[in-house]
Amino acid sequence: MTISKKLIENLGRLGLRAEESHESRALSLLRVIMRIQEDPPKPLQFADIYNAYVREDPDREFTKAWVHRVLKTLIDKGFVRLESPTAHRKRYTVDVNSIMAALEKLRQDAIEELQERRTKIEVEHDSVRLIDVGELAQELVEYLTGKKQLLESRSIRGLDEWHRVTGSTIYEKAQPGDIIRTSVLEFGPYLTGVESRLGRLFETAARGIEIRYFIAANVFQREYELKERISKEWLQKAMEIIADFAKKGLKFDVRINADPKRSFAFVSLNDECIAFWVSENPLMGAWMTRNFNPHLIDNATRNFDDGWEKSKSLVGLSHEDLAALGGSQKSYIHTLMERGEKIAELDDSIEVKEPDI
Image 1 (spheres, rainbow, N blue to C red):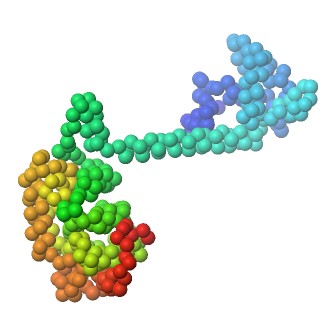
Image 2 (image 1 turned 30 degrees about the vertical axis):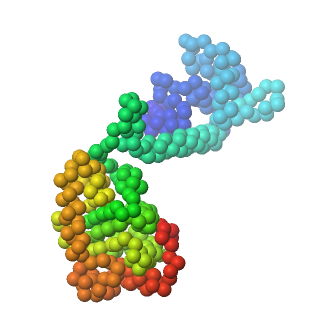
Image 3 (image 1 turned 135 degrees about the vertical axis):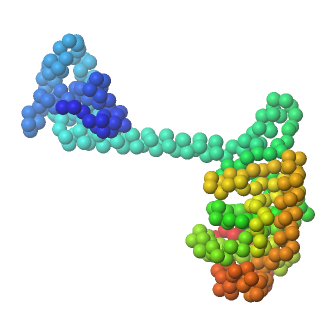
């Protein structure tokens, strides 16, 4: 009978070679035992098994010790049952039930081994993913030359790297009196991990850095995404903190950009450096310093500030302003913002930190 490809593959996954030209010794002996057993199976003596194995391949010489070792392997793995193990003449038997039990054990062993390997791979994957190649390049250059060289530009791939790059070059570097500008045109990609990002903004503003957060007016038409992807409790807490900042005079403001056509999605530190999105799917971006492209940074910040001065803050937004932006008094965001303003007015103990809901 010809062995199927699927059977070969599945047995191979469990550590058993089953190709007709390269059959494993254990599988070969198992086949011999099953062929000489009666139906229903009756226990066989070792001599019966050995003689049948020799007849199977008369051109090869098999010692009894060698066959004993292979047979012991089958017993240890559970394929062959040893009947009356304390008897002088031991007898052996095998059937579909013993084979199934042995294969199940091999399957469980294989699963455990694969899970262990997967855990190691995941740990290694995370370690590699978290490498900041910009910092690594600078460290390597300093090691090779003994001199520091500062990066002037770099590409950004994916949201994790975006957070890492903007964190080290903008949020952590900012000092009291600095301005961080953030322009969000399509907030869909930004909703992933928004809790930690806004928490980072809150903590940065609390250090005396001015935060200007510009969002497109279409946020009112896409409120369903906020409802689906962000906890209402978390968003309400964030609105309370934003209102509390305004009450305390901290320079953290969220404004609605009614005309975002002349801008693009970016975050910048003063006019020193900027990180902006190049594409949304896949998420690709770029970071650069003023030395690399002062013209781009100046245009981006100038257009941003022009729109910023003409825009309305989310805090204290009137119903007329809201209607002009395409929203309404019943808008999800506006309702939460109004509630946050009322709570901020009554509560002086709102903590300035990441809303941990």
